[in-house]
Length: 360
Image (cartoon, rainbow, N blue to C red; front, side, top):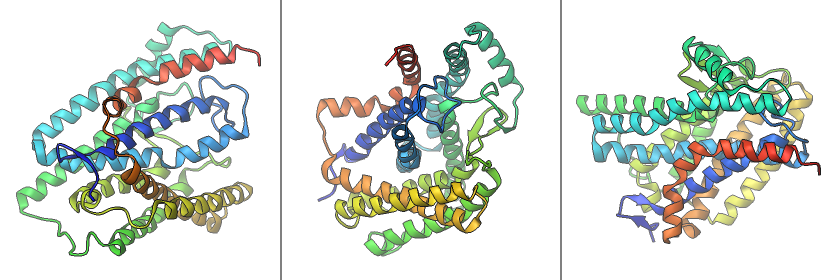
């Protein structure tokens, strides 16, 4: 049977997935205070290998999944409301929180960073310096914790860009009378899996090139800022583009409404588990080779990209069967997912700071 929907337009389990992913983003940010991989985090407490593993796992799939869901609802929204209304709504719903967020969260982050390390912590001074650096409209790599950064609002900047590009392409195609042919076998398991695997290959090839030019000797990935209004990690942008495009195409082909994800969820869970172990092994080999062995680097990126999409398929498969809850609580939580994403960081910082001062 097709998945449960709300008003025959929204797929219930996608809304539920989005809320669960946002809660995992909160958990990711909680564990950032306890990982050796995030020494730049405002509150850096005692590190643990468990926190490292949690970060490694969650960092793989959270944002690609959110971009997939955003892409799925983008085509639906632009068809329902029209291009102009779609753009106005996106700029209002995403643009205003993005602007307020990048202006306010930078000083707050710097305040927690300075206070937790015993440095001079003046929120007003941080705010003035932050606004000044924003007005430089700097373009290039983010070099330090004092460099202007959009924090976690980078996701909104990239999503706005994707939405505007798609709206422009959609309008151009409509005016020129172009149409993207829907394959006769678009709902077959073979076609669905071929799209995922071909997408994995193309995404991996692009990522290998970007990864090689944007990875440090210690394996950290650089962030790029463009005129203070766009921020992303170059080595991950390809997978975000494909995830968003895949979401658009999934709606176009009615995959999630008319066709379940192929194979039982147990298959995807087992397949994902195997890929995760292989990814861990390749990650260690990559680090031991100081990220310079292109054979290991390429293998690592291909397997990691395949793992990301395997997790996505596992998530869709499990939730399409067991995640269609429509209780008032689930609907309220799904509706609040965006608000939780926007405001969660301040309480996370505060709790981390309180725990930092507690001797255990």
